[in-house]
Image 1 (cartoon, rainbow, N blue to C red):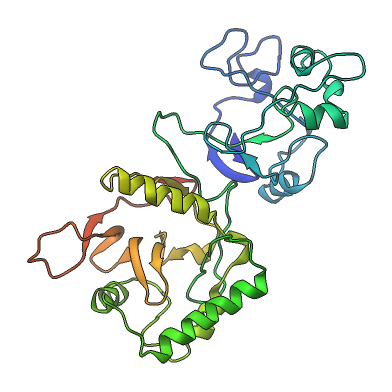
Image 2 (image 1 turned 45 degrees about the vertical axis):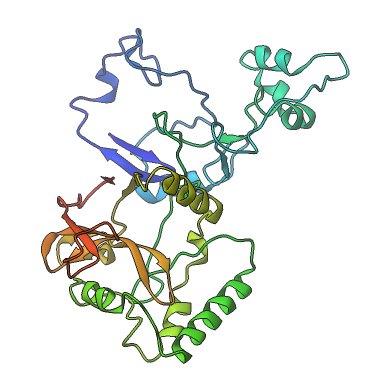
Length: 333
């Protein structure tokens, strides 16, 4: 049995028996529970259910289904953070021509989904009609921030990887031009950088290939070529996260999931994910680097911080990682 999230494989395991010999004697189709009693279920809405008879769909077939627009919600829709967002949807005081308000639509939607397919209820009663895609919310009381509102497939734009910039509303041409101008100004000034020696240390100890800011004579062209428009992140979330962390003495948690795409994701036979969180591109300065380094064969996390022994010769703290899964998802926190 294979389980996919937004078209990407999330979990796979041997079922142990034929599907038609499963524990559902009445052959009932169930979600989030073992028929006929609840085991650990939550109330959810299920849209656009499709069933196929015969050989199981391939991974490419599943991905195509996930990317194909449906009549209701689809994986490409932008989600709304219903708990923290300033623009969280709320139902209006609107009433239809028969005097029915949003509360009426909420109480009748489960019996007749079609009532919410009309344009007015969808717009006026977004909560009652669930006409928006809620984001995944971590089960925690702490405030959280999200860089992206969907699963990101980040592939190499060049041999050195890809660069994801903020989504400030600039056009693609303006974003590329601004980045090139900033790089050229830095190069013209002689590539100044307070932490150049530490950056070079990270670079020289890296396993695999990375963008060489200091030694590459055509670094600006290389940076522009590596820009990936598809992985632009929410800069407002980053600024809010940074301010919130500063108010809490710098304490914070970063958590994400990662999985290999194909052979290009591997160094030899190992999946060694490499992610660099930049506080600055020109000069290049890392807050956090997760990747493959010569000092640890399974990968390493290097946290750059001023909170260190003043006799230390490096500005980062190094933590060795356990091996990332070669198949499926690995959680990094």
